[in-house]
Image (tube, rainbow, N blue to C red; front, top):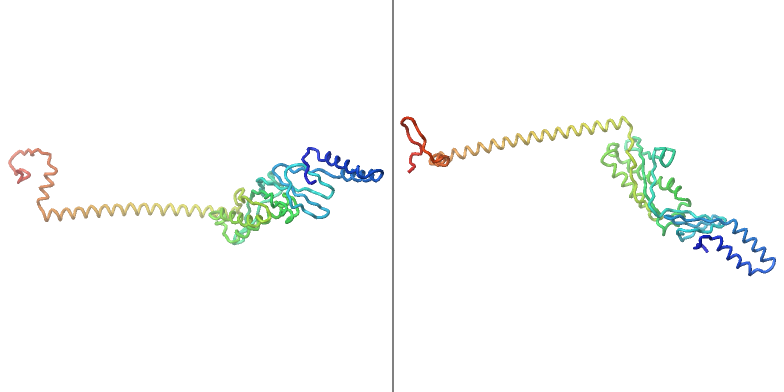
Length: 297
């Protein structure tokens, strides 16, 4: 039996052993029983923890069970080992910080298209497809920690190195930073999906480390570009203001010209304008003189 529902798998095995011994009477039965007890004593128990799936491997015969083991206790006879793979999301970070997951520097190093050396902390989120867990073991023949440290890390690093070699440092540090890691993620996803390792996300776990002198040059260039953009904006604003004033002056001049032409061709417009502005009161004069609005009845 590959799986035991009871809390004590050994008790069940001993019960079956007792029933088997009754089929071998006399001394032969006792010998067979002692051999079986010896084998049972050397058999260990293994437990598949919640959130994981188990893969039974016979290290003697080299066989891998095609069926995944769910959560529970299992007998592991001599030469048998049960590997556990996570079916829930786990995250690992390759970082230069010795106080995190590893005491050694695990950060990624790569180069831009000009050969400038860069480095960065990179993280990955992943889980294993239970239906393909046996395929994953058959491919790499090791536990999850070793897959992370070896095949998974190498695949991510190679993808980053390949794409970074097509970009300049300013692009990697600037507008292509997100595109670089996303391209690496897509390649790694496609590589591991057929064997059951589901790569959910690959992302930068910090800033990309650039040599100090290069970083100062990048920052200076960015500052100059921003200043140039600001100056261009000021010029554009001033030009727009000047054009607006010119347009207004041209409009005013055109209006005056039109009005003058109208007055020249029709003198009555002057009287009409005066009437429009008149408040209804006749002006008072000291002395004699002509009264405005001649012709007003």
